[in-house]
Length: 315
Image (cartoon, rainbow, N blue to C red):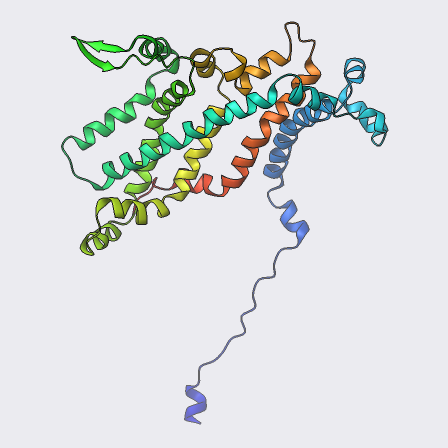
């Protein structure tokens, strides 16, 4: 009797039933309705441009894109001539390759330099470390437009101060290197800021353990810090890639308008014509220019929010 009296009393605990599909759908419905409206507002113009890019020019000039839904399966309502002319007759393929030649190095170079700098600001002790970091972050306020003319003069005539050559006269204007350096210079402050905040939030015990094991700073950086910093590296890669890919101003000033170095944004401005008579080609060119940025974003987007928010709270 004593054993029975001392035995613990078990109570049946029933788990809460999972909400049904309709319950999840109607939960917080005003918020979801607003989000749905925003999605529609963004997608409708994009859908219209996509449909227009596959329509014959005569149909584009005579009717709206929404009229295709009345004869959706009519082969005469669709054509690939716009894409064929853009890629094969308007030099858009060469502009696409030129843009890749500009964008990939202009993304890799600042990420590489900023990663080394962020590690130094986070885990290495040297004089005026905090002051230098503040100066680097302060460069974020320098407008790009104000620096274009001074940079152009450096590229064409070099830089000299009190008889000392600060920047050699290499005549870089019109070369891809000029655009790489410009995008690197203006991308570094943000990259250093993001990467330093992330790397500084990593547990110090990891660095101390590696130092006790005899690892050098280079080994710690390459084998420990870089693998742990993939989210923030991917986040900045998205920013820098999209900024460089969609840039027209820097490429136009430092590369010019020659067809052999023409980038995709410059090619888009030439497609439409002086009076907008080639709108049907502009829609096709716009979607060609969107393909690679979309691939980059969706392949790295799982790191995007995690990389931007990491380092905001340390502890």
